[in-house]
Image 1 (cartoon, one colour):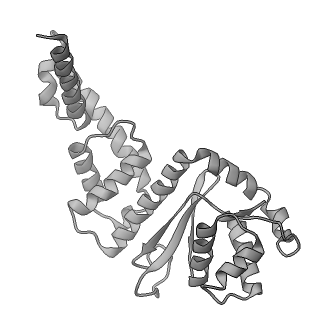
Image 2 (cartoon, rainbow, N blue to C red):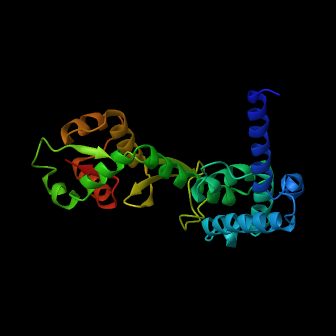
Length: 256
């Protein structure tokens, strides 16, 4: 047998063992246990790993259990059916879980909103991992907001920046915003990074125009922002200044 064949067989064996251990399919690896070693140690190992994984997922959904009675059952099923992917974190496993859920059960609109929160938070966190330097730089700018926001109307060279770590989502219900009266086409929200957390704001039409404009043109002056907004909205100067101030206070925009 060639060395290349031996290596391929060994790689296949490792993959089979890793996959089986990840979902506690212990019988598959009994033949791989070293001679003289008890098979029940395999069960002890896998049970401990699955319990830790279940605990992490349960913690991620701690606030959702009240509206998701069957959640523990689905978490148990998921960890026994879907192996933990290489380099998975608690956040990425939760994201995979909520993408798996609709394939095995029909979710209510409220439950879809709950899973959307997990997916949106993960999207922002993943963007932060890909663009760590951009996030750090923006947070440095945000730390100057209290000082620079006062220069908006007096400093024509002041630059306005949109938070680079963000994602939009549309809630189908008012469950997560505490309102029974919500638009028939849903409530649009924006998830964005602030320091080490993910924040959420509800976007009204004017807010959507502001975010979209800043996204399209990038860093800009107040004068250019006004000119671009005139094409999509009828915001007066007072309302725009109020909106920019509010956005700077929550960390959605920054100045330089």
